Image (cartoon, rainbow, N blue to C red):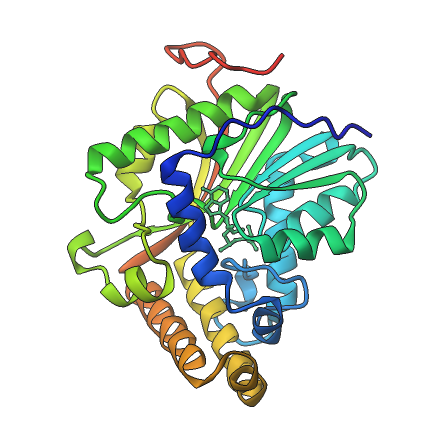
Length: 310
Ligand SMILES: C[S@@+](CC[C@H](N)C(=O)[O-])C[C@H]1O[C@@H](n2cnc3c(N)ncnc32)[C@H](O)[C@@H]1O
C-alpha cells in the first residue's frame, strides 16, 4: 500500500487566511459536531430517496450513506485504486472507499487539525490525511478518482470579483484534471447562489459562520470548467439540503443542554440560527445544492498539463 508524500511548497498567503477561517468554524470541537451530525460525521447535504421526498420515512443516517454511495458510484470507486478527497471532513468518504476490496490508497485534504486527528485516530486502511490547502498540494502520483463534497463553497472570498472567482475555480479544476489518471472521474458537490444576489448574502454567514468565504454561482462554475472538464451529469438537490439542515437542527435541539455545556449558549444560538437560515435559504431557492459528475475532456483545448505528476 503506497503512502508516498510529495514535496509540499510553502503555504500561500491566501491559504493561511483560509485555514484560519476554517479553524474558526471547527473550533467548536469534534464533540460538539458529534452531538448533531449523524454517526458518520458527514457534514454536507444528504441525498434523499425519491419516494421519501414527500413523506417522512427517511433517516439522516440512511440519507448520508446514500449520498456517499452516490459520489463513490459516480467516480466508479469499485474500479479505483487511488482516491483523492478534497475537503475530507471527518473522513466518511475515505473510510467507505478504504473498505472496498480494490482500494489501495486514499488521500484526504482538510484545513482542520481536529478533523485530521479524528481520522488518524480511526486509522482506516491505506488512508493518508493531510492538513493542507489544495493550492499547496503536490501529489506524487495520479488518482483514479477525485471527490470533493462541501469544500468548494469555502474557496472564494467576499472581496473577489466574479472574474477572480472564475480564475480561482479554473485553477482548481485544472489542477484536479492534471491529478487524474486517464479514464478518471471527479464528483463535486457544492452549495451555490440560486435566486439571490451576492450583495444580499447575509453578513451573519460571512462573518459569524464561514468567515472569509463566498459561494459560487453556477455560471462561474461552468465558465471555470469550460474546456477542462465535461459535465456528465448535474443535479440541484436544494430541498435535500433544506431537509438535512432541519434534521441537524432537530438533533441539536434534542442535545441542547449537552451542547451548551460544551461550547456555551452563544455558540449554540449561533448554530441554531445558521441551520434555520440555511434551511430557509434552500427552501426558497436563494441557495441551491449542485452535484456534478465531471469527466476530463480527452482532446480539445485543455492546456493545463504542466505540473502533472508522472
Ligand atoms: C463542510 S466540510 C465537508 C466535509 C466532508 N466532505 C463531508 O461531506 O462531510 C468542508 C471541508 O472542506 C475542507 N476545506 C475547505 N477549504 C479547503 C481547502 N482550500 N483545501 C482543503 N480543504 C478545504 C474543510 O477543512 C472541511 O474538511
